[in-house]
Image (cartoon, rainbow, N blue to C red; front, side, top):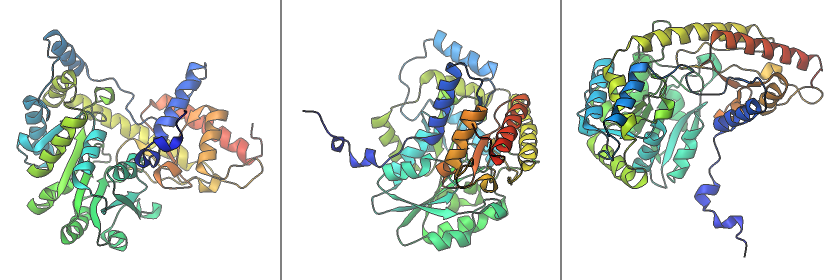
Length: 405
């Protein structure tokens, strides 16, 4: 007898697929069909992994460092992570309070599984990265979205937290610089958020994956660096994918109180075991080797940000906050949306129109809990940014004149 859809667990039925990966996959299909698709949807740098890091991976293979490692990660890598957290963020963790996982996404998931129970609620600032609510749901808890607004730079405040927190609030998921908005926080802006969480006994899950990608001379402050109490209440998540252009190497890590890391490590031991040994050895070189290339690439990302923000602001009906960091812009396109006729009524339709008519891939804001916006990645060359914005301008011009398709 053919099994019905009810054979799938309620947990699996309640989780959607990643909209960003879906857009990237569709763009790849169009490219395979011979279309010159300009992809502003991808959340990964267009730079290559640094040569010294690639060589370290080759050396690991040649030295037959291809076996299981300790579940929590190579001692050498955990020491390198601890050293960089101390030097760059003023965070002192012994290596045994660091867990290496197969990607920062896995680190986030294991933290949710270790800390959340079915009755718990999790505060998630909106707009949010697409996987946050799904990971909370997979852990059996309930996501509670805390709205932020464009006119305030999409920044969270303690007052907004207070409006949404309840007696069952267990965790705050705080990502900065943000995916999708690029918003970041100064120490003064973080202090009331940390104070609120300490007062309410709320754990802070701090996703700092874009911490090396800040612009206009900004310096990154980890919320965990605000004091010993805040540090003990915080799980710091990071990885090598964005800063070192190592998305495919799949190395992320968590730093937290010992009992939290121990719980996460036990879960990881039954889910994935250790991260890839070759990638771990390459990551030791990434962290301990020369860092000038990272600084040069960040400066180039800043140039790209300036160009794409300028071009977006020149479009009729579009407003755009200049991001503090990351490599995303989150323009408000509500002025471009029309009901009926040749127009489109929401971000999903506009994203599909741009892909079909202009061969430009963007992600609708609905995927991030923000209707009327689009997310564009500027992790591509200035030349491609200019070409893509030319296509978008032409497509929007045709749309406003009723010349769609």
